[in-house]
Length: 524
Ligand code: SIN
Image (cartoon, rainbow, N blue to C red; front, side, top):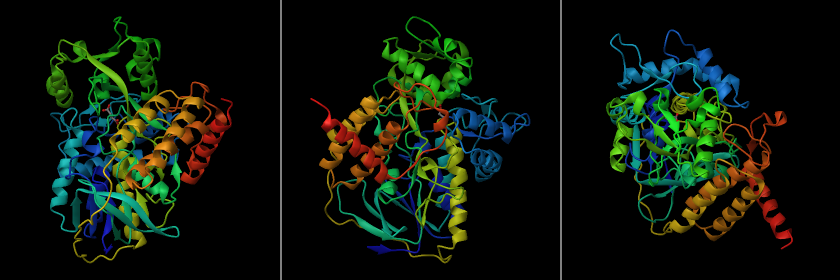
């Protein structure tokens, strides 16, 4: 066991880095499974940060779009607050050196993405926003002596005394090892979402709901776990994870067509390719299921400009042997963002004392049932700052420098069971994905329970199954369709259910148990 006066930050994406900088000079310890800058979903974000920077735009319009996209369950107060402070965060990132695209007059160049009523996404070099903002924050952190970063360590469990979090158990991310307990005065979870629980995902390989599951297993309240966002246009080129073809391409006029050459979105929604993301995702899914092989066509809209204006997309095309100037890009739906997560209030506080949360691991009420494009990085920035300020306000940490933490792992631990993980991911995609129904969700809960029982001594795997259980059980409980949650057996929204889900893991486990018993009772 190690005891430190440092605030422990679990994660290494934009929320984690921004919070560490905000907390300076208070000493922090960041726990990062990979080398800093690698492995975080933030670094893979292509779109940018949504913010009403143009004179013709307003925070009110941004908040209204957020509420509309969220399909009836966005917390309007949170949306108004986030939209209002967005501009200040862009200016602060700019002051730190983030190289946002600017025009000749110095104004921010903004992309248009789905369900935004105006071009509102502040970007970097077309599709490089996440990577470049991360670079800027990492450079600033390297000049911040109060921040210690431990790379190659994975958080596995929270230590609690009653309802208070007193520390974090960590293990080696590189090889099986035993765990070490780091006792700390405050813990901020900023370790990403759950996309990698699905077989088809745009998330980095390590992002598999572990942080959400860890908090759930410690008894924290969870919010909206059933709401998972599926991105309509990941590259369908057989790669795992699936590379993203940013929505900004459609904002520039790229269209979706099927193998018959039909532009199918025009018959689905008045906004066609720029309809809310859940609607485009379901249409793509339907085309794929029907064997119609949907593709993204950037040729007329962008021509050769796609190569210079969207370097990440161009790089993926080159790797896959696609020339986007003359050819179309095969696309498929992939798990992209978890709107649900650890319930967090306006200060980033969880339901457990001394535990804060920000970024995709948190569920703040901003996204509702369907996140508005590029509100993800914005939410991470806003709640990272809010949490940092709250940690200071609560006075959990003494200001003076703390000793650096030296970590060495004891022998022990288990090698990951790749087949079990693959089984879990296949099950989530097959039964808890874009289209759901009661039979499939119960089947998924059975598989999750079986896999969990077989790996009860692997805390990291049990964090994943805890999150998978929460998603499937809450999806089973929500007998309607809303935003990213679609039920074939309940295809309409139910006005009585136009509210957020608040659930603890213990309740999700009861729902799982009921599903198992129902099956056991069923006549063979
Ligand atoms: C995209 O660039 O299409 C993704 C942006 C986001 O998920 O916010």
